[in-house]
Length: 182
Image 1 (cartoon, rainbow, N blue to C red):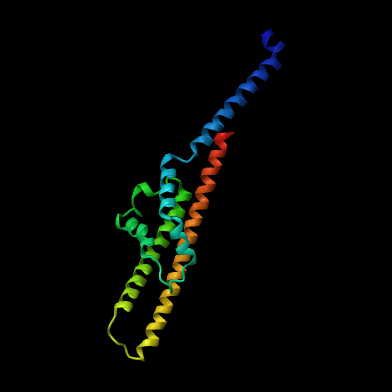
Image 2: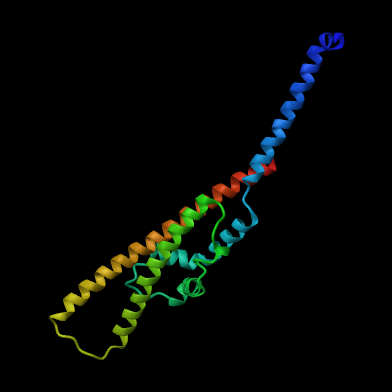
């Protein structure tokens, strides 16, 4: 008992050091548990591949009155034809990233439907041999103008949704990588 009273400050110092060391390690374990897993990194790389520079330029700058290469949208078609929008490999485990991905895929679906309709309509117009009445022309031009506006807005929405996902992934992954490097 005399040993404890004589060396109480020394013992308290050791105990405090041990507790702070254990708390620091527990905190590191907790922080590392929030690190991005390999699955999220692979899913993010798939979206970066899908949204190549040609597609991003099309989504951002195209007014859809001018011709564009339909092959630019091949990745979109393949993505949805294979059902990758619902495939677990393309979903994120992180809830925030998954929320952004869900917004992106909803925007992609809308854009895909509108772009397919636009491509189909333009194909029909260029190959059409039927003559329309003059009274029908302003109505069809007005419908095309409306559909072009919808297509352009949808393209912009898809572009913005991708950049939101890209920014969220960048913040999520960069913060975690910085922590590992400390």
